[in-house]
Image 1 (cartoon, rainbow, N blue to C red):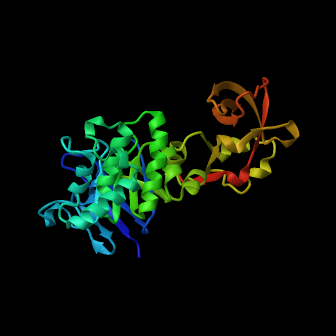
Image 2: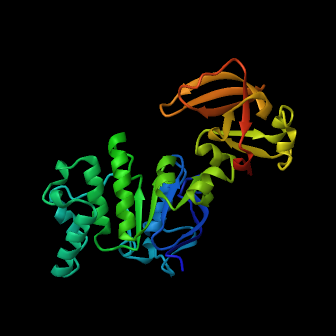
Image 3: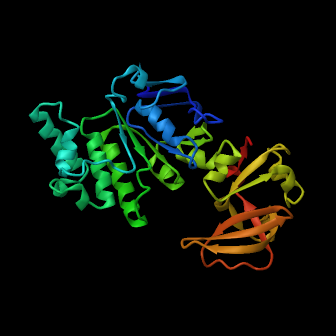
Length: 339
């Protein structure tokens, strides 16, 4: 049985022209980590509030361990006892120490359990040396770990994280991503985190969902959502995608037979790393270089295959291009798109 089951969830706020969340469905097993990605305004925060029991849906149902989620209209205090939401602004109690922030979530338990959970969570989140610090003395990454410890203190079934890396500089992001991934997996908690950063979603998740204008376009494991995107939007959202009509390629292909398994009206997603520069006898296409963008570990080359058909091709950073080039595609990694 799924720990979290979401079925046809919808929510429209008064005065809005379209739903903030529309007909969203997915499920998660115990211990799974779900990365929810989307642009600003795509409905990520609304969906998180619905999963936390802080808003009532207009339609659909959320179940936790098989039991329906009660929203604010059915509860005196909104929220669910087995769900914890970690906000991106941390929301720590400012005038008490780290250990008191953590034990605040345990105030209804006896002293022995409270002390045992405090020590366990301090160790889990690597906060032992910070237990007597005040929130104002913490760095951004430390404050995020304290907020996570507070959420994990009473062993929730479902953990929700709202943009957990958004307020951190690149160096702190790298460490905190590693720390949070380890903490969540060691705790055995099912987790949903929302982000606009596709790299975070791909590297930390068991499943990734792409939300666009309130609708969940695709839910799949990271490798599948990257290599087999369901739509043009999903393909482009994960970057460096050459989306081209088969009919445009058929006219310029040096080996037209490679396109025979795709319909002429189909669109294809050809990732930049699935194309390589080659010698003429091996080529699928001839092209002319337009621009090169140095990105450190690799360079991204823009090349024109034909008028209106410009592709991106990745190559080693020191790869020099002549005036004309030839391209070979790894067709086994090319996917058709739904629109």
